[in-house]
Amino acid sequence: MNPSPVQRLRRTAATNAAVCAVLILAAAAAPAAAQLQVGSTWITEPLAPDLDIADGQLRLDLDEAIAIAMQNNLGLLVQRYQRSQSLFRINQEYGIYDLVLTANSNVNTDSRPSASQLDGALVTENETITANAELRQPISSGGDFSINFDNTRFTSNSFFSDINPSLRSSLTVAFNQPLLRNRGKRITERNLAVAKLNSEISLDDLEVQVVDTVQTVANGYWALVEGLEQLKVAEESLALAEELHEMNRIQIEVGTLAPLELVQSEAGIATREEEIIRVQAQIQDAADELRRLLNLDEASFWDLEIVPTTPPEISRVLIDLEESLIWALDRRAEIDRQELQLASLEIDSDFLRNQMRPDLNLSVSYGRNALGGDRVTCERPGEPSIADLFAPCPDEYRRTDSLGYFSTLGQFYAGILGQIFEGWNVGLSLTKPLQNRSAKAQSRVARLALDQGRLELQDLMLSIRTEVRTAARGVETAGKQIDSARVSRELAEKNLDAAQKRYENGLWTSFQVLEIQEDLTAARTREVEAITNYRRALLAYFKAIGMLLDQKGIELVDDAEADG
Image (cartoon, rainbow, N blue to C red; front, side, top):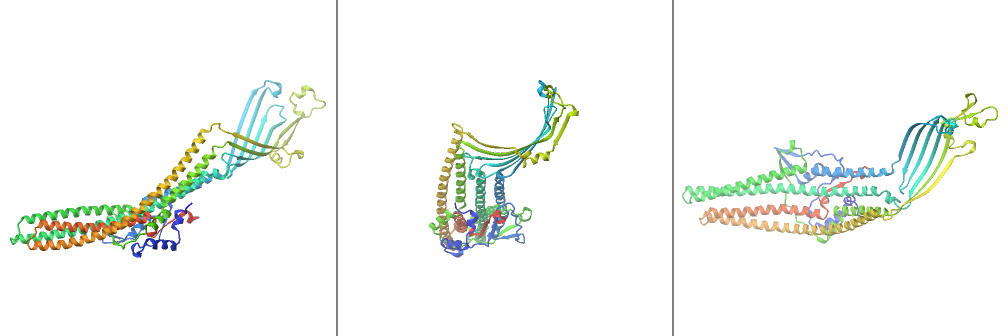
């Protein structure tokens, strides 16, 4: 089985550095953040961030935003609770080995009319008091040991009861063991093993959630950066339109330009003001989404303007696709999770195959018995007659010898006159459904589920390979788009300079200049989008190869292991 996600994240820095050197040939392309440890259970305390706040602005860099989200994000907090619940379920399943004490007591009275002189009384009155205890210990082989201590006190008005009241006690040690069905540690601990696997799966789920959160927070950060950069572009476009409008106004005043030109420049200003309003709303939406992801206190932080301080420009990353594919198949938590699910399905398959066996049980027990109470004897003078044997004993001839309860217990160790009252039992019981259709069907379903799980693992690995190839291609494409957009913007700037000279010489109209300005605005917008898209493409790439947490300097620490 592959190492767990926590073990994978704790690999030596030398190994990580070696692989990173293969994948990332430009050292400045993806700088690692300061080391950040993220706990796995609900006991992780929310972070009270020390933020840079001044003049109604919250200055925030990307690493700081991710660090806050790792502690405060509500989605992660929910996932940590699920992880913690899976740990407690392991303790719950260890309950199969709990020592069980059972105690019961009962009082029964009964009176019946006599139907025979042999009943010993005209109306027989009996009272039975029981007090029993059992101590049972299950064992890993599927059987159990038990100690039973039973006590009975019987009282009757029948003169045939020689010991009245009588005290009976028995101490029995028993062992029961399945020989076919439900035999063995693997079968006995089936639910425990599944609970442990589910706990590891929950850790994988948490790692996936952490990776998704890092990517979502970073994308939200770049969405805000992009919005602010687009606002600058829109404001520059508005400034160009206003400058053209002022030039039109001056030329109309001196009579060198028709008044219609002023209307066209006013329309251009209105269009750009509309774009600014749209971008400002987009910025507020992006800022609110980032506040939600960081789970910042609404009363303290939601009215602050967020000012990103991490520049969007970054050095290019050169990618080795083959190494990326190998690394992804080794690092992705989704593969580890699917392998753990396969292990769980194998346990279910083995268990249900075992349930098709006959139920053959061995039982062995050994016990000792003791008797005590008041023994009543009738010492009549002379030789008793037959009638005397069936008649009540007169009080003057009655003799009572008492043997107390503790003397009764002593018989377990030393019998009366050297005699020990004991008993043995060895038994086998066999139960076998002749058709056994239910167990056979359940076993077949489990085998099919296991085969299905293997196919799902193959499909997942194929999907991850496709995702890596797509992400690598996305990084390469985004880099080329930056170059193309930058050239387009530079050409648009030169084209606008030429258009303005034509306009100043009366060769072009305001409408033509406004079109060239719009072309420049569009080129600047594409350049901003290309730069932030490259950031998003890198996030998708590092996520695809399972290295996003390493790239951000984040270590997922299993609190359960740390406490252990």
